[in-house]
Image 1 (cartoon, helix red, strand yellow):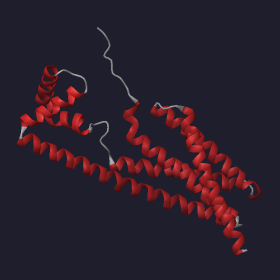
Image 2 (cartoon, rainbow, N blue to C red):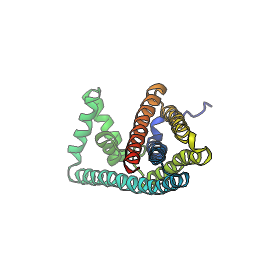
Image 3 (cartoon, rainbow, N blue to C red):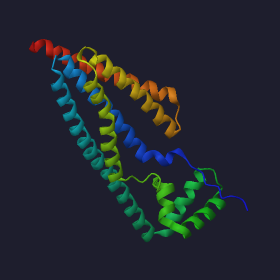
Image 4 (cartoon, rainbow, N blue to C red):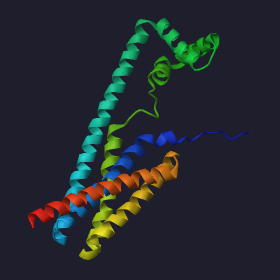
Length: 232
């Protein structure tokens, strides 16, 4: 007997991967930038760590809240679209059948085969067929607000721990290059991991994440230095 074949596609990881990568990236970048900005303003070591810890807690809660609200809004939109499609199926099933068949014709099937496919799929699950092929909604792409919120908060906190740990362990004279260097290295690894998990190319992902993160840290450091000099 032949073994049952089940394909695994990277797109199945899209929901948690997007939230986790965004959270970790933001945790590293925002906390490292905050630490660098406060350090550039000539703050003491203890003040730098307090600012970093406050940034970790506030950032994690903000990420969770924002992600939950955003994804919940998307879910509400998807549910409203499904409710509308359900009502259309109840009102005029034949018109919906023609609409589904027309979709398959545009995808390359001849009209007769397209009608047969529409017949079979609508007999099995009419709403599911229209959700997938007309609206682009499926179990794979259906968003999960709580999952996204928890992933964002946890990944943000995990990312923020790195620059905080470096800032706590290294002496003050080497704090800025150590935090910046470790953050960029971690971001490059994160970009590679995200690309590998999502099946994308490594180099563009790494370059994209490190360039913009380095720019964010440099700008924050510059602002901190400017205000620190002004206050001094």
